[in-house]
Image 1 (cartoon, rainbow, N blue to C red):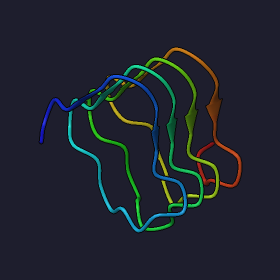
Image 2 (cartoon, rainbow, N blue to C red):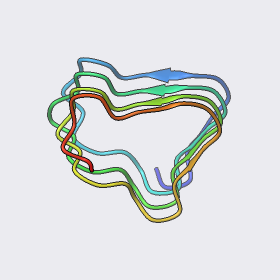
Image 3 (cartoon, one colour):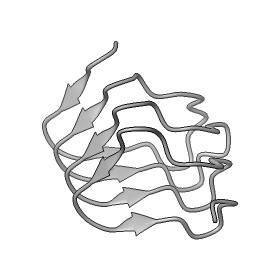
Length: 79
């Protein structure tokens, strides 16, 4: 649902997830590494720790994105 809050980290690596809810709030890390079906990040995404989108088909960063830690773009087409 929109505005979902995760009080910890969320590991969706190597899954077939296609989208994330707008306003998703993750207190810890968000790992999407190898999740090839997702192509975009939702508006208003908040990640308090590391955001790992390595080896995904995400092509741009979303409006209002906040990342409190490391942003791993390895293996993406984001320039």
